[in-house]
Image (cartoon, rainbow, N blue to C red; front, top):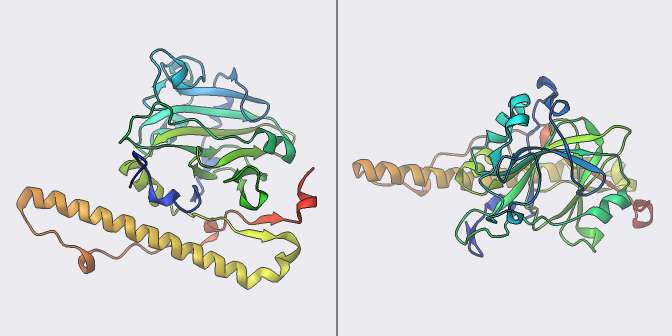
Length: 304
């Protein structure tokens, strides 16, 4: 989809984020403990380990702050960190999309108030030429922090727009981070680690997202009414899965059209549309679809 001069993905239209199937993080080595970090403050007390930067240097600056300045795409691998983190590099490369900055973040524990104070919008698309893919941000949770949350707000001054996404090991989130104010409320005694990638929107990223059962709306539940929500919760979950199925149908129908067009160019066969398109694959109603049951109490109880 072309919007405001850029190619954007339909999956982000409704909420500005998607949550994907969890990844089996426990099966991977803890390479984030072996990479080299640099002091770089962003949304709290943080350090970053760059895997890809503007010119392959051990630094984390925005690509537009270099000479020549450019947008957050076409990152260059940082050899020293790539050498000790091949699995992290493989995961970042898996979508097949153009990668800009690729970094591991180390975040120290903080408070909800700190997280809101540090909430921000990214600047991924500064100097992004018209007609190219909109750059979004992907978050791959490395450490197991189920009591910590990514906090998203469409309007930073409006708590009613807030969504909290839990961060167990293997959580995979993709966010339009120039639309959604975002930060992490990290509870615990140890640092949180996460792989963060800038990706250009396009067919490769769209395909990768839809192969991982994207959920476009986390459940928002008032804590004091949770016990009474049993059947309603399942109703919302069913709505989520139906919504995902509808998005998948649109996506795979579009793929079918493109494939048929390619075949037509080769052998002049007629392009088949509409009823001839294949049915979308079945969407599994499993636990991974329930990814954001927010325990929202009244406003007075939320602030620390």
